[in-house]
Image (cartoon, rainbow, N blue to C red):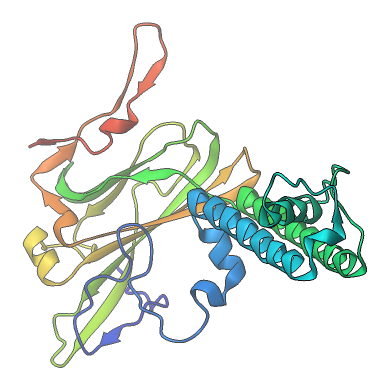
Length: 303
């Protein structure tokens, strides 16, 4: 097995690194400085959950209309025709603002004074910009490629044929067609010879199968631990002691979106298991169709 160069994750650290990539695929890196959060506004808005995005849009919409309602109050609601005397001046100004910023214009309320017309013209411009912004963000969120590839929670070291092997499983949770799926697996492990600090080495692990044309079922990823493997002679406890981490990068062509989707996963620490094997989670039914049980992906049995 030929040791690979640092893939961009760093090979020398003063203190022990818990893991390079978290279980959810995010990097175990605290960034100081640079752009993050609200500073990178587009990424911030795209990455928000749908509930957070809708909530933020609704709050922004209400705040802007309240602000313009206050401005109309300052210039005088008498400069708005069609005022309902049974309603408070603020709510008259608020609902007029809503009609103006959305360019709905029902016709009942309209500006008649110069000041009110100037404010309404400016608010209409803000409304056009806001609609364009929301439309662009919605398109960006819907068009953003995403995968729903599910990995097993654990990785196992188990007997396989005449050797040992490490195994993990993955499945597409969506009822969509994934084609030409491929997987790359890398090992990050502490060097034994390090005297000061912690030095890491990286290995690209050869797989029994690293690419499949069709991905409708569960795919079991297998690396055979033979004499050429960097994992040869290591049990689970030794792997934990040397902070061994398996990093998985999967990609496939999503026929629904006509573009490639990517997913990454990491296994380390207590995610290592031995003395078990994965159970089969798909089988042929009596009707000749294959039944796939995605919720049984993590099921194991003792050897």
